[in-house]
Every structure is written in C-alpha cells, then in structure tokens.
Amino acid sequence: MNKLGTFQALEVMRLVDFGAYLDGQELGDILLPKRYMPEGCKPGDFLEVFIYLDSEDRIIATTEEPLATAGDFALLKVVSVNQIGAFLDWGLPKDLLVPFSEQKSKMEEGHWYIVYVYVDDESRRMVATTKLDKYLDNVPPEYHAGQEVQLMIHSKTDIGYKAIVNNMHWGMLYQNEVFRPLKSGEQLPGYIKQVREDEKLDVSLQKPGIESAMDLSDRILNMLKEQGGFLAVTDKSSPETIYSFFGESKKNYKRAVGMLYKKRIITIEPDGIRLNQ
Image (cartoon, rainbow, N blue to C red):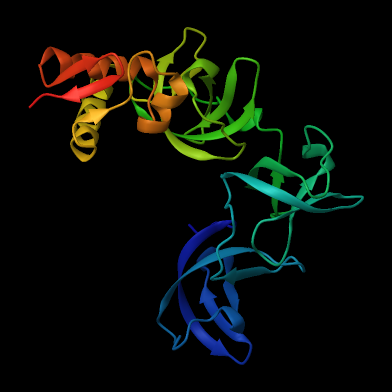
C-alpha cells in the first residue's frame, strides 16, 4: 500500500512534456515533474520517489530527499511564522507546517526545534508537531540491559540529557556519564542501562559491563603499541582526559586497565601505563 509522506518504488506509466506519470495504485496516477526525472527515464522503469501533497494539494512525487518523512523525529529550522502557524525548512519546495495547536510553546523564526512529522488524517497534508509525548512511550519498553539503541538528544536537564530512544521511547542520559557536550537533535548510538519499574529508560553512551571493558582493553593495547609502549593516562586522570583518549567513562577505563594488569600485559606507573615487553 502506497502512503503519503513516504518513499515508494513506483512504476513509470507514461511520459508527458512536463514530466512522467507514475502508478500510485490506490492513490491513482502521480506526477513526477520533469525537473526530477532521471536521465533516460522510460515507461516500465521503477523509481524511488517521495510522495506528498504540493502547494495546490495535489499528490506529487519527487526524487529529492526531505530531511524527514512521516513517522520521523527531526531537528528542523523555522523559516517563517504567520497566522496559521510556523513553517519549517525540511528540504522540499513546500515548507512544512506546524499549526499553532501543535506547538508546545510559541515557535520563533530562525530557531531550531525537534518535531515529529506525520500526515494529518483530515487534510492528508504533511505537518509537524513539537508535542512529542503523545508519540512516545505508547508501547511497553521491551529492552534488555546492554542492548544497543539509537538515540536522539532532545534537551539538557538538571540531571543530564533527555533523549528519544529508537524513535519510540523517552530515555535519560545522566550527567555524570557524559563527558562531552551534546547538542539537541544529535543522533548517536547508545545502550540500555536499565528499564526502571516505572518503565522509564536509563541509557548510556558506553557499553555496560565486562563486554565494554574487554573492547576497551583491546583499544588501550593497540594505542600502547602505536605510542611506543607508554600512555600518560592513569586512574588519577580526569574523566574528561580519559574520554578524550578513548571515548569512555573513567569507570570503564579503570576496569579495562585492571584486566590488562591482571594478565600482566601492562605495568601501572605513577604517571601512566606501560606495555610489558
């Protein structure tokens, strides 16, 4: 089933002076304007296109890629505001509307916001909202500790960073486990620390447990070899210094160094660690 606001592989049915008509099945024939047609396009070809309503509310196709599709969360910039709402640049000629009723707080031109993009049931137009709660935590969080997930940083709080987990749930990154500034809208891999009794998620940027330490110990060993057998990093080094070297927490670093030391692969010295010969 072809859906508005998504990418679809559609067959070219016929060519006209101003473009090509594609088989939209239950949506009918869909125009792909000439400026978006790939060279050599002919009937019978299948094209990967994005389908949506144009400024005259006609279903249209494009080979351009929007910054978000239906069902996505995205960081987008407000390019104008009028009596209807705020309009976002989402990479297509027709700007994306956030109606006033879908604004958690008043949106301002030139500012960036994380929004959820969807197709309005009544108008069939692509719209967006900053009222994210109704699109998150709608299903039980069936994760396990250590599971890798995709994070989008939403906002900084008193205790850390609020993040969107796998486009489905809210999660919390705690400040004492973050060793570099994170930006709103930044997307990066993370890991489930725990699913709390209230079904809220605690997440981390580092792999938890022994698996993380084993991975880090291998990287420390490789770096020691690259640096001639000595690294001026100790368990007394600051968390920021350790993160700048390895992208890991001080706790994980100490665990990994301990593993190497117990195997007598390294010697711990007052000003660093040394690879045993």
